[in-house]
Image 1 (tube, rainbow, N blue to C red):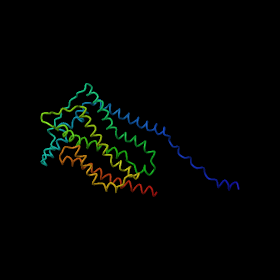
Image 2 (cartoon, one colour):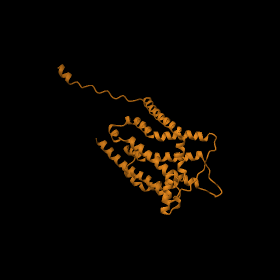
Image 3 (cartoon, one colour):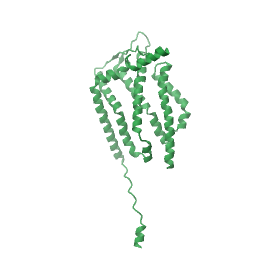
Length: 282
């Protein structure tokens, strides 16, 4: 009898995993943010030291007629017979009207440059914080998320810098309500335009990633995106018309990549929905 009773005893259940408290999550988040800030600051110091290269070769370059995009668009305008595409006549005069304006701008651009270069590492730290909350199948399906998000952000920044920024500077920098009024662009205004447009497009290019997670939780589907494709095209054309000079070619040059992102988002939503169904069946 004792042996029988002993054999029928159930094995002790495995101890449940200890869930992290709110303060534990907060402490973990603080660690990820701290490492991200350190990376940004270190790269900002590198940018601060290389002042001439950062400003002359990168920040101020899109306003010059010999900038690669301006030369290519000018050749395209000559070939198509559209003079508006030629940005060779753009001569912006940048002035500083604040005593500490150039120094504060130097600091600001250094921090922004550090953020842009450190973006892949910042994304990696954010992913390390989110990853423990995912199920095994979600982790498996999300492999390469850091690489994809980093590449999309970098592509958005490059697309904005080499196309959107020159077109924006040309339109607003040469726009005149009267021939008797000359444009003298404040340094802070120029910098804020370049930074905001560049960073905004970097975030916009993350659209497929946002759609993927929305589709995973069932908030959005590929059929919904297909159904509203024509409305989204109108929205994209409107956005392109706002941030480009008033000619059709410039609007098309900007709208095509944005619409391509939307179509990519439909494919991403479809695959996310399929994986969601498979994981539920399992």
